[in-house]
Length: 154
Image (cartoon, rainbow, N blue to C red):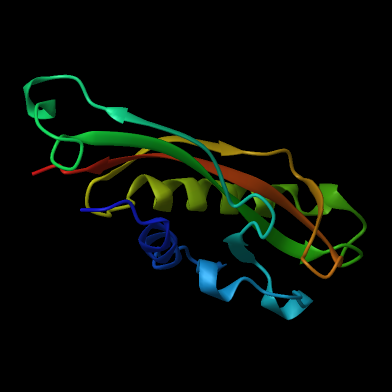
């Protein structure tokens, strides 16, 4: 196996989350319309961050760099847009639904199943006003997913 952030993005996009459209890295919207919500997509700015890789410890790590077991940790940032600002009186009118969707998203990610990839951490950002790539305002939150990827895990 080789590291593949695109396979990870495709795997996340394939998750089934009731009532939420999940986009792949190849389908980040240029602009989100109210009718597109709720929507979860890779952050167009800073989608993949951090990361450190090193040979794992243990008997399986002997050999050349191309055959020893490597682990790599990276964080992936997603944006969840729930409803357009102004669709109700304010954020407080969306808190209940935002909470339900946050739980559904975390539950789905906990079932993430891509070969040689493990979910290490998930973090929901504060509920508030976010913008789509075109600058339109929505109520929503950010989601950070930290994954451990393994290479040469045979």
